[in-house]
Length: 90
Image (cartoon, rainbow, N blue to C red):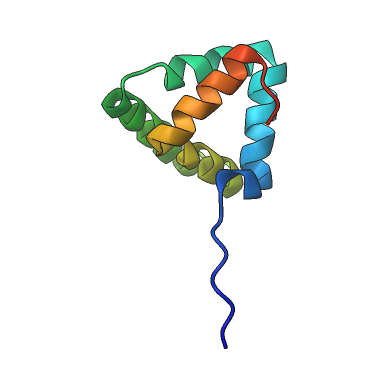
C-alpha cells in the first residue's frame, strides 16, 4: 500500500520561514512586507508577481523568489501580516 502524499505547508519551506523571521526582526524588511501584505489581494498579487519577475531577471536566488511567491496565497499573506505586526511566533 502506497504512503499518502504529505501536504507541504509554507512552514515546511526554510526560506519562507527565514523571510517571515526577518519580517519580524528587521524593521526594514518588516516595513516592506507590511506594505506589500496590506494591499488588496489583486494589488498584492500584481506587486508580488512584478517583484518576483524583476528579481529573477536580476539573477536573485530562486529560493527567495519562491519564498515570496508563497505570499500570493491570500490566507498565507493575511497570516504573515498578522504575525509580523503582532510579533507572533512562527
